[in-house]
Image (cartoon, rainbow, N blue to C red; front, side):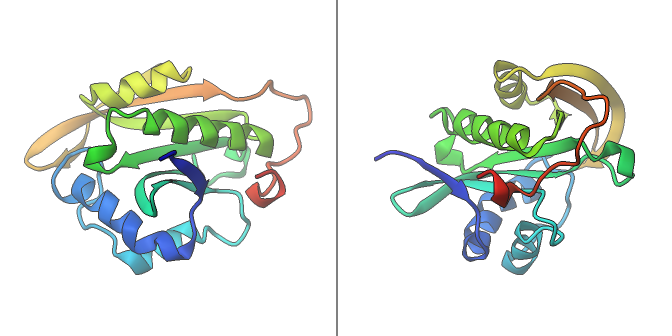
Length: 181
């Protein structure tokens, strides 16, 4: 069966929380320390009402295998053309190309929206995530040494960046994803 990539909906929140939970509770990949429940995931999917930051899911035979989300890179207005991405897959979805499908589709959407830069923060070491991002054109732009502490250890965070579009002299603001998806 083919994997369907689609926009996430509030009804997906419980399944997304289940996919994300092991990354919070059992790994150092997410710096959250308490796994969000379905209600919190639904709130995150709903965005801030502007419709700029999409969540996409990979679905196969009615089961959600993973998700990719976008969020503001920084809160200050001058950063509005930069967006941060995050991607999480169920354990049995790794190694099947699903992460590449999800992230590529998100990058296409972000480009169509008018964002110029996608940024990914990756807790290190994480060779699978680094390989995925670099395969899709992300370049390492820096590392924050020992900036997170989780599961008894200090962790480095690498920042990868991919240009999505040329920089305009007077850029228009990014458009809601519903206008281009």
